[in-house]
Amino acid sequence: MTRRVVVTGMGWITPLGHDIDGAWQSILGGKSGIAATTIFDASTFPTQFSSEVKSFDLRKFLGDAYDTHKDVSRQARFALAAAKLAWTHSALDKAAKLDKTHIGVYLGGGEGPLDFENFTASAVEGWNYAENRLDTQRWADVAYERLQKIVEAEQDPNMAAAHIAALFGLEGPNFNTLTACAASTQAIGEATNMIRRGDADVMISGGCHSMIHPFGVTGFNRLTALSTRNDACITASRPFDRTRDGFVLGEGAGMLILEELGHARARGAKIHAEIKGYGSTADAFRITDIHESGRGAMAAMRLAMADAGLSPAEIDYISAHGTGTEENDKIETLAIKGVFGDRAKNVPVSSVKSMLGHLIAAAGACELITCILAIRDQVLPPTINYSTPDPNCDLDYVPNQPRRTKVRNCLSNSFGFGGQNDTLAVAAFEG
Image (cartoon, rainbow, N blue to C red; front, side, top):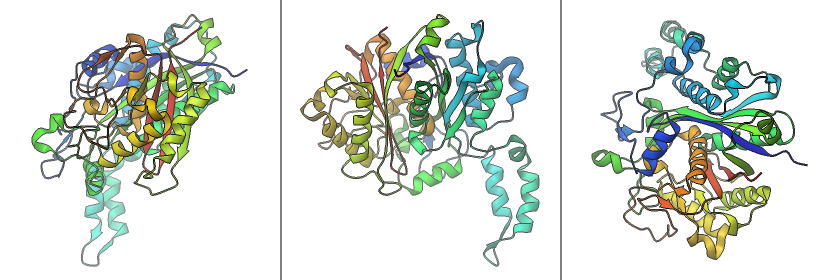
């Protein structure tokens, strides 16, 4: 018999706050976390705004453990804080006895050195402009001085997962996946399967990311993926709206405690929801483009429902990937129609990226948390900034206002560069 996997804890660090209920109320209130970029001087960039995490101090989350973990990257700092919040929320910190050889970590995240300014400067200063090549000796000399902090902080992609394991003394499986914007959804799905097959009893799973730096913004601007609505940035994230012009770059972390049902019951844990299904596919198409038929997205949703034992008629809500790019929103709409047929227009679909921005590898985990909160409170989060319907996007996007309704079964979609498609099915727990 397949072991059931439930959610017993949640934590997030978002542009709308760090408290689960506080940030959730901001989402339901249609509050935007988007403003002019302050992390670096973006005044000469095509996109001069983002969705930053504000008022964050890792010391407040880690206490006496802060000195051990203080030199990690920005995204790893978010991950540690969100993991600590989730661990406390699950009451694992009060458990009388835990076999930590059966508790592991599975994250999505990992891009970016600690200090992009010095990383960039070392490359510039090491360039031989007369010969149009990198002077490797000069670069090495400059890098030794400028990048000392990066070297000391060990900027491998798995560092966030490694530091979380060290924080809690977890000796079970430890993994990190880098599948772009689908990373944390994939991590949660794979962690769920690890618990199902008995490789672990508890997993901390989710994602973290911070790309609000010159390299990150330049890259996405070159791809014309970011909104450039600098004169109205607070309303720039417009998923499914006809006037959308790209996504808004955000940052943060989302973590969940996934637990085998029997293990959770044995310690008297509060159960918030059940992860019932997971689907993962690849478009096998272009690296930065979704296949125009939506075939990969459709397959991921169908696989997640089949894994969960749910039919399209039983899905009450879809948390969309909903980036606000022309391509994503049109093809995700097409994929939902392909899966749900005549019922598609009666299934509410919304995108909290309209408020949080796109948290990249952390997006899926944070959006899954909003699904669990929607189930808890029987209310759907809105898609804000929706005013001009697009004939290619003609579903129910829960425009501008939250909606009270029955919510028991949700799908959460994440699609990433490289053609990665991942969907989770999460449901109200029924004993």
